[in-house]
Length: 248
Ligand SMILES: Cc1cc2nc3c(=O)[nH]c(=O)nc-3n(C[C@H](O)[C@H](O)[C@H](O)COP(=O)(O)OP(=O)(O)OC[C@H]3O[C@@H](n4cnc5c(N)ncnc54)[C@H](O)[C@@H]3O)c2cc1C
Image 1 (cartoon, rainbow, N blue to C red):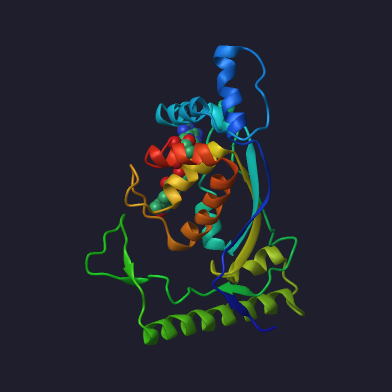
Image 2 (cartoon, rainbow, N blue to C red; image 1 turned 90 degrees about the vertical axis):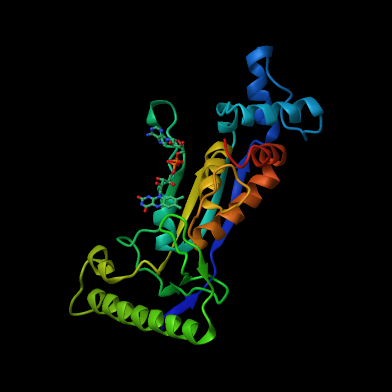
């Protein structure tokens, strides 16, 4: 089997529930004691002001009502970064839920990551460990990087096939040891608007943010898709979070 390569990182919305209205209804039970008005578009100044105040003053729990599920197809190294996000809720119940393709129960597909030409990856003179900034590779360097990656992907894939096939017939969970982190995997991710905002604070780079983060390029490109989903589903909460410096 020939290996395939791609630079695409796929993040697609599966479904969601809630919205700004649910954040507002949940927050207002505090002073009203009664049920809110339910699903609606938020337009009033008072409602938008409330969302701003909640974010600014870090009243986080109203943003834990509602949720979003999406499908991600990306290289395994992106998953490793993503899965460090948990958010502890009451009694340490994890808030981000993940289900990822198993390399015990399924042979992985021969799909591997190749960085696109515009992906900055060359170390600069002023490189700093926790604030890495890179330049794009010139065409000759890019060719060299890509052909080195392809050679090593091909070798790894051949070894995987060898171990899985006759006469080796090794358990898939052991055969996978030879595969690199550039191979693709897929997962379902669910989270709530609060956990998503926390995730976006760390996994996007915005020079204007209150706390500037320096995430890896690939997880940032995944995070930017997720950011669009927050913006669409919770537009005023999203604006409030941006106004507060992308922090909650
Ligand atoms: C640029 C960058 C580089 C990184 N490099 C590395 C690395 O080299 N190695 C590595 O291992 N990780 C690394 N990380 C992961 C990082 O250390 C965090 O684990 C990860 O970003 C999740 O952040 P979080 O805890 O804020 O997120 P979440 O787990 O989503 O938590 C959100 C919020 O809830 C709080 N929280 C969550 N769980 C608990 C708990 N049990 N008790 C109390 N409070 C809790 C957090 O403090 C945080 O405020 C890196 C992250 C970034 C953004």
